[in-house]
Image (cartoon, rainbow, N blue to C red):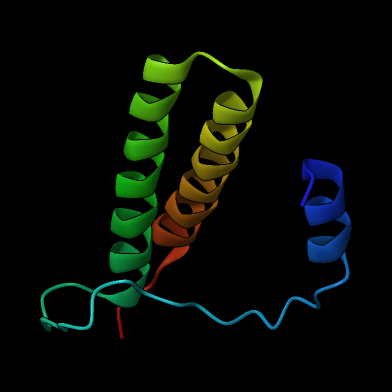
Length: 83
């Protein structure tokens, strides 16, 4: 599947506004907004290191998308109001 075909396919998926966390463990100290940011941060770091290794346009695009997800999660964390 080409990158443009994948983008076209993903553009057709409706945003359900659901949050999927990688970590199943739930410690009451950490809220979901922090866990979402933490997961996104790890993914962005992994993508950054992959781009440093590969130096290709595709690896850079993957890194930038991961960085955008981290930024969005950080914004959600900043807006979080504890219960």
